[in-house]
Length: 234
Image (cartoon, one colour):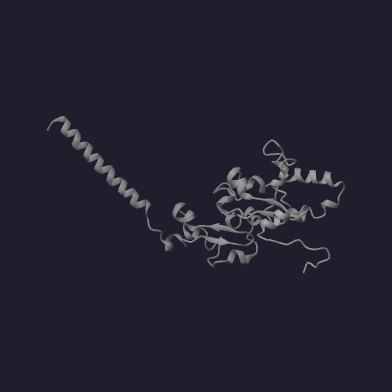
C-alpha cells in the first residue's frame, strides 16, 4: 500500500469518527425534557407583589440542581404557597429567604442585579398623574434603544412600586416656589440622566414626555369630546 493511499484511508477513518462524535453530541443536546426529573416545563409566573417568572429547566436540567435543593425547605411544593405566605418580596430575598437563599451574590447572582432574568418591563407607557399630569414614560426606549438595565434606575432613582413617585410628591407642589420645586423634582428623578450629558437635558424636548391632555387621551385610546362648561362629569 502506497503512502498516499494510506493517508486517504486514515483521513476517511478520522472523518467517520468525527461524524459519529458529532451525532452523539447532537443526540445529547436534544435530550427530551423529563418533567418528573426536572420539574414542570411551563414557567411559574407570580403576580404578587409584582409579575415575575421562574423556569425549573434553568435550575435543574441546566444548572444541575435536584428538586430537593429547594423543595420543601425553601419552597413548599404547593403552587401559590409563596404568594399566600405574604412575605414573598425583595426584602425577604435580601434576608436570605426564598430566591435569596441562593441568589446572594456568591452562590448565584444577587437578587438586586440581573432583574431581567425574572422580571419583564411593562410594554405599555407609564403615565404619571402627579405632581404634573399627563407625563409619559416608556421602558422600551430606555431598555432596548438606550441599552439600560432595570437596576440602572430602580436601585437609586425610582422605587420598584407603581405610584411611588405620586405618593412621595403628593404635597410637593405646595412647598415654596413652583418653578424651583419642579427643577428639584427633575434633578431628583429623570434629570439624573437627562442632564444634557448622558441624555438630552430635561429643559429641552419637553413634549417627548409631557404629552398633554390630548396626547394622554389618544394614548389611552379615548376619543373624549370636550366637556361643556357646567356639564356634569358623571
